[in-house]
Length: 431
Image (cartoon, rainbow, N blue to C red; front, top):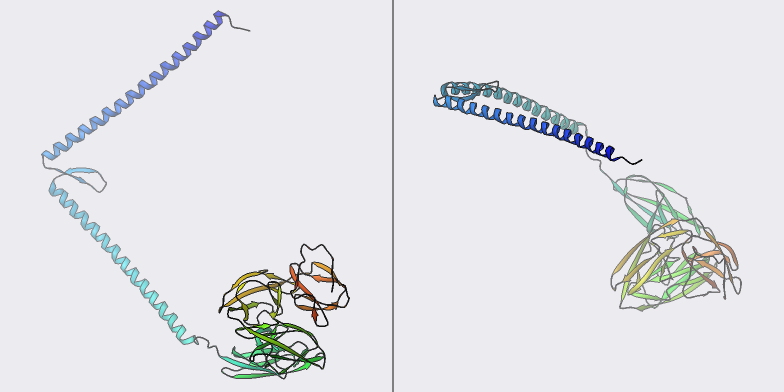
């Protein structure tokens, strides 16, 4: 309910009385603080006047200030101050001299201990250390009755080395040698060779045919060129007969400064028969070279999606000047990087490196041709089936395939397929 005029007037008077009491209390406190500060100032002034008068009194009589050992200021005669200062300086000099002598003794003791330890270590090393181990090396000559076999040393393939060849600068000791050649079995399968320091050992293998063999002879309009069978250089001279396993083979020739025509030939080598091949070398003024390396020797090289007939680690090969997309491909493996874009500059050798890692099959394809019986080639490798073929496994990524029948290819350039987005299970071609 609302306040009456009398109640409102009474409330206002109570509030005003409370405020006046608070203000009076504040004024009292402030006055007391001011008086305390004033007393402190007056006391400080009295102390200052006393110190000034004391100093004037003693200085008029010739006294000087001196701080005693307890840190108290005393007024003494100049002679007494000088005497006390000399005595203190003497005590300090004596103490510092003792500390300096003790530090010098400790430093000399430490130096003698360090020298003793160093001499002991040197004596031990001089007497008991036999000196750095000398690494002695030797060589192994590896031969086979059929040349061109891959050489394996201690379980590792020696890339670009084929029989006959010499393994040089091998550490002295026991080493294990093996060889491999497509279509052959080696005897003995492995040899343990003891390498002597600065010596040369021999490892001789016999290759026995593991299947039917045929022969090819390669000729060209120019001499002195390198022959590649299934992407691998063979140690054979032009015009000579080369023995290879029967079946479809990829033959390529390389000559420095020239381009081969055709780039390669896929031929059917029949058992016991000789297959002659002919290439033409065309001179090219704007030719560069490409050298491709990989951790997998069996991967074929593709230039602008075109099958080159060469494999990685096969050495430099010529290309016309220009920009190319380069890949190495093998089904069941993925590339790192997937492809490289490279400009070939005339007269220069360009190196590319690829790493292939195994991948599990991800997709299957059914492939058919209008006329059955066409051979299927995936990433340069022949498949052990002909069209129509069902459930061909493809690893993820880009692959290249082609067909061949009676020595005739379906397409001059390999067909490209990306297995990752592929939803079409059946590929049909009019061939």
